Image (cartoon, rainbow, N blue to C red; front, top):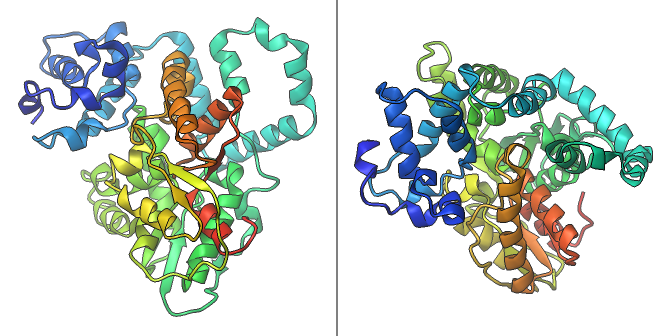
Length: 417
């Protein structure tokens, strides 16, 4: 299948990194050549191979463009497994990945400890003191970028405040589970509250398992497949049987969870449960757009645009549904964003591993949003949300970044959660 994609070149215009360099090596078919050469033994992978695999955003924009149906995401993840297992990256990048994936996101306990420290750092005034002191200027740029890019933390994680079962306001539509995840749980508790409220007002009982944690997508996309499988298995076991759907409001998580069957395809015990679980996963906009919902009581009264999260539009094929939800709201003036499906440069931990390339993509995204004249930009992934918010803040643009669930709840005439 990889061989069939090496000649047509239809993936090149879709690839953000090829657009940055116009270097054939930094295109999907260029990288596939490298991967194939490593697999057939004609190329010994080294530092350059690792750098090229990390330069890729894994945005999967090439997949819909490929007439041969090449599953490029699987290839790049396999290549990153080679890079990880053979320790081909520079020590500085390996340390950064180990801190993020091997320590912070290792388990619910370590992540909770990190988020608690982050809450203290953000809320105690220590952050402002550090930034005013100028000490960050003494650190390497990559470390400085990590510190300045630390996410905001809600007063309390959503799981600490929500009941395990949130009953429907007007019962009868069904019973769904809701993923709270890791970053979403601590940085976007309000989005979870909005998601649950919209679902409840649409007639669904919402189940929020207390034992759930990370879906494993960050590890899976960065060559740590075994750890991703452990996290995925734990997540599957945390949700009760008999749910009509498992609703996810994070594009990267939803895309990965829909591929659990592939992740466990060689595990005879987990293959069946993983495939059944994956079949019930639905993005919030995908799930809601095809069902009756409460008529809005308020009006938005804003010009709104929409940024397609890569793992929503390219990996899941979801583009129409969020736009339908937005344009159904009274008072919305919707304007299509230029290059709406072009990556913003967040891409999981890409903005930490490759900050310069991430910033180049972010600048283009911010310019398009500002040029649209919109007062609100909607997106469906926490990485995109944080990245775009940071870029707009740096540019001085007065544009609000919202999740679709928050916009819907606002249109219901309520203050968002």
